[in-house]
Length: 163
Image (cartoon, rainbow, N blue to C red; front, side, top):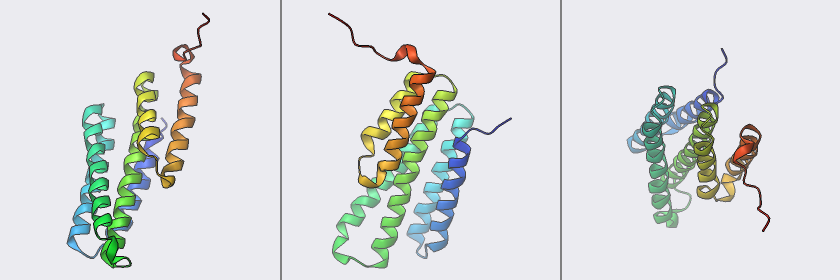
């Protein structure tokens, strides 16, 4: 039995979180990194148990953390070069990438379950939400996944109607 592709994402996220934990000397950052790691693990555990709503809530928590950290980084921009701002930015970037990767995994989950409308909506969410230049790989992956869904579920492709 092969493991679903999103299992490899879980490993990547775990490694990223572990690296952040290792570099965090201040308790606040370690607590945030631990919280993000916990939400990530819960996300994949919920997907494995078919608790999609709970998985979505966990990923929304990761997105909220990224947003909160982004606000902190912007407020402290005057202190450029400070270790605090650099750590906060690194953790924010990791949280943002984790959330985008989780949405992609959720789209794969829906595709595997043949829930194509939900998969399309999830991939669209990535395309519409992650609009920064650094998010380009996630958007491109979501676009490829949408094209793949068109192969799996061609009946749902809307064809232009002739008047």
